[in-house]
Image 1 (tube, rainbow, N blue to C red):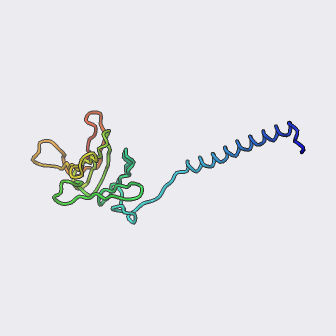
Image 2 (cartoon, one colour):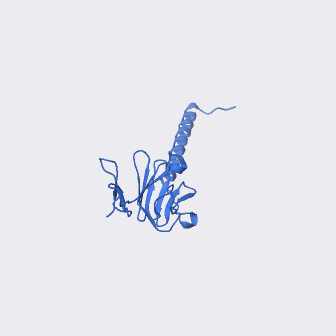
Amino acid sequence: MKYLPESVLNKFNIFSICFSFLTTVFCDSIAQAKADRPFFRSVGTENGLSHAKVNCIMQDKRGFLWFGTEDGLSRYDGRFFTIFKSQPNDTTCISGNIITDLHEDKNGIIWIATADGGLTRYNYHLPASRQFKQYKYNARAATGLPENHISKIAEDAICGWQPATVL
């Protein structure tokens, strides 16, 4: 049996190591390029969105996408929508159906501004019957909202947020 000279074996080993390294780098770069490519899928009313006109979008700290529409609030978990709508004489739901703005504060509380029902606080930490708290204009109250059309929620340094009634 004839053996290859040691110099040939060393060259073969170096070639094998280089080939393996380059193959690994090449495959890794292809995988990285695929991972860097953004993934986007459009969603609409055919997927469960509450209305085709979306006024605002927010992603919360838990990863949910929230869509404020002309007919309710839609929460999207990546597969399914959960719709939240105002119901007459029901204080355990959102205060209005025309959602104009969304804001998540530092505690994970979501504030929902509406054009037709004031402001709503959503706290997922609470039991379902207490997750929504409505804040509406009350002419007899000395303090509170100046009207039920809230167009924007802005953060400030004093109390954390301020509802805006005029843009």
